[in-house]
Length: 358
Ligand code: PLP
Image 1 (cartoon, rainbow, N blue to C red):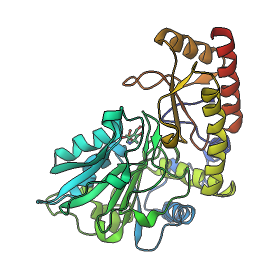
Image 2: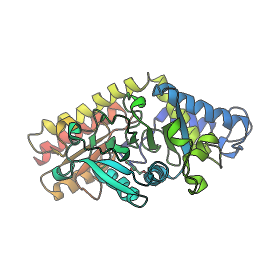
Image 3: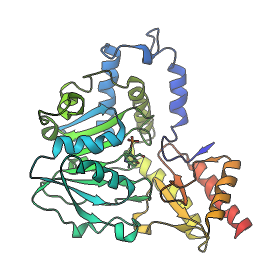
């Protein structure tokens, strides 16, 4: 199948084959990685190696901790304010769409929030003008959603926040392009789009932000618990971390994050061109400057035609092209693991569908 699912999403075929090869017996230990103790030397090594690979691929500077947590991006919507938002301070947000709104809603449960910039008035068809950012001196942090998975927008530059920590939800674009991690105080991402299967959530954070969580917080919801225990406070999602390890090795073998970006640009330009050259038959939802390299969103003249497109695409082996139920339309998710050939096939299908229905 040509898998354009938004998440969980495509995994590299080579990674799945490697996992299949090692499923029953991991590295000569007589059992599966799923069966070993997380206190074993094998898991400790896997835990360390996976952190190192991420640090290497993303050029994460010293002074940052990589953690493997559970509960998905959605738990981070709460953990970030629980740990970083203190009384008298505000959590600031760049409001860019559905996922940033969920993060805002959750933060409101724990303290005061403020909007530093918003594109709500433009139906989230762009990233707001970052030069107009309104960040008060009461800011605990500024939260951005680097890629809005549902609307299909992506930050192309990062806001300048001075001394205020920048927090990034990178659930849907982590490792899709090079990134200056030093600009962030904290980054989080559920694994199930670019990193591996669901079950593990990666948090990359500056040491000083996470070494002293408020004392009243539940143990599992404190960053300092996991930082001090090197992500081994309780039983970690061993198999998901193992899969992330394989995906990171795959990225490294293919030349790293800069190569991922190049491939993603080539892939998406095929589909965006099919939209732009269709004379209005397909209409991109997002202003071209802010178009995502991960989630391509578009509409057609009528919902009826969109339904027909989805149905025929499924008959032709394409999976996951229906837009999110909240916004409708169509969406092709082109994460790192989606091959160039799948995008070529989709662009050809789009052109052909237009010929038959235009
Ligand atoms: N943030 C973004 C940008 C997402 O795309 C998603 C899920 O699609 C989430 C957060 C929520 O992640 P999870 O399902 O891991 O809780």
